[in-house]
Each structure stands twice: as structure tokens, then as C-alpha cells.
Image (cartoon, rainbow, N blue to C red):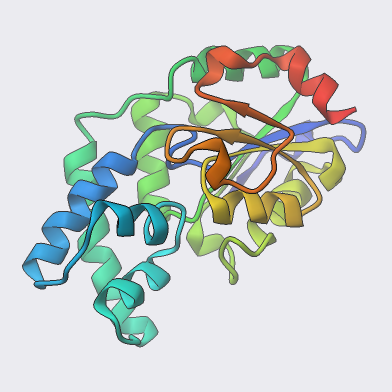
Length: 227
């Protein structure tokens, strides 16, 4: 968890990004990692099941759904560590941002926005992505699964992000690509833009805007959507 408190101000606005499918299109690489992982444990899966029960979900839910049985927190931690290690190995050489992201981040900074990351992914994954893309310094707050007790669709990670950034929820725009993520952002009292990397518009709860990538939006548009 990071925070540069000198930048916070009650009259500022913030943009908070989920990570998987929003900062980087990691979901195909998560799918590859889960395929290897489930093959090892002889667990059945389909692409359709991944779309419904993997993208945007926390590992404790994913493991119990696909294995079809409950696990203790210790067992979940062991399974998660193995699977996420596979993901990082596969993804580290392929890391790249969603098209137009870096330019959009600089545009937001230029217009005075505070920036945050709020992901259900483990911190090690977030660190890999932010460092591989060279964008860590653009964010004033970075929250991962270890930083919250309740995971999306619960709004805790977004409420905590707003608190750390020193902005009220109604002055924050969330970028999300999953049903649980959009639900979390909306429940936090924030405006949500749907990023259509993982799902169609019809598969997400209502958002104030939808983009295919960051060529579809700019900082002045975010300002107008927050009014």
C-alpha cells in the first residue's frame, strides 16, 4: 500500500483503476496459468466457465468453484501461491498496457487528477505489472488483495482508495472490466467506466461510459462525466 500524502486535497478528483483487463490485458495469461494449474490437478474447465467464474473474481472463490469443495485459508494460500507463480512466469516477458493507457494517465495527471490502483490480485502480481510497464510513479495509491478484508463485489477496496487519496467517492471515477468490479465501484458511490477487454457491454452492470481502450476517452471527458 502506498500513499504520497502531500498530494491529497479535499477538492481534488481521482481516477481509480482495476488492474487485470484494465491496466493490462492479463486475462488471457491468467487463463493459460489456470489451464496448466487445473490440468495438473485434473480439474475440468471451459472458456465459458473462465468468463463466468474466473475473470474479476478473487482466488478463494475461483479455487473453491472449480475444485467444487471448500478449502481452509491456508489451503487457498498454498494453491494461490502456486497458480500466481505460474502466471508471473508466463506474463513477465509479455507485459504491455491496454492500448493508450500511458498517454491517458499522463493526460489525467496534467488535468490534476489523483490516481489509484485497486485490484483483487495479489501484491506480487500488481508489483510485476506496474514495474514492467514503468508506471508505478504515476499512482498515489496502490491497493491489492492483501490490503482489504472483503473482496469485490464488496466496495472496500474502492472506499479505502478514496480515503487514501483524500477524495470523496462521488469525486472518483473507476475503470473496471468485470461484473464484480463494476458492482464494487458502483456500491462505493463512484462513477464507473466499463473497459470492454474481457466482457461485452451487455454482460456488465450499467456504467456511465464504455471504452474498448483508452483511445476512446480523455481527461476532459472524465471531468464532464464526474459533474
